[in-house]
Length: 162
Image 1 (cartoon, rainbow, N blue to C red):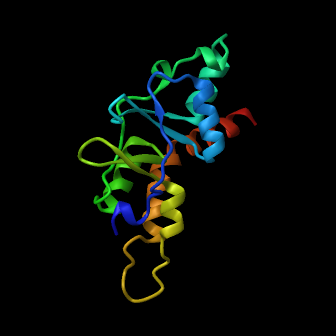
Image 2: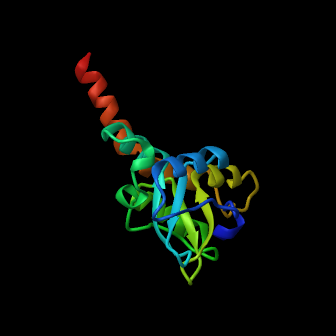
Image 3: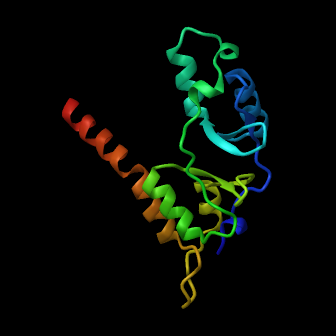
């Protein structure tokens, strides 16, 4: 199974010189949690997530219109290509501890977004004798890499406080 078989192919994006207010409006209107940031040549040069925006607006004494994406966008961009095997993309997600990847072609142009939600939706229980291309086990393994350390930290903190 290839990334292009699973990804959302109509991604929203935002220009590098936009502000947080514009980014939040795009995220709200498109019902998404990640916004690839592109330069004037439409090449992906960063990403900003709903979490990035929330933290930036909550920790600065500035209006969202005064916070530039160039100040908060994450670099480097962890991404995948449309023809990548889905397991390669899952390995990138697990290694980099991200739940979403911009899907970028060889020219650096945005083609889509691959999220763990998309992966879960396309996973197969493998009830037949043949191993599915994308199994529930593949999804769980990736999620454990993404959330394992955080869940352990919360669990240990919870028990220490009790």
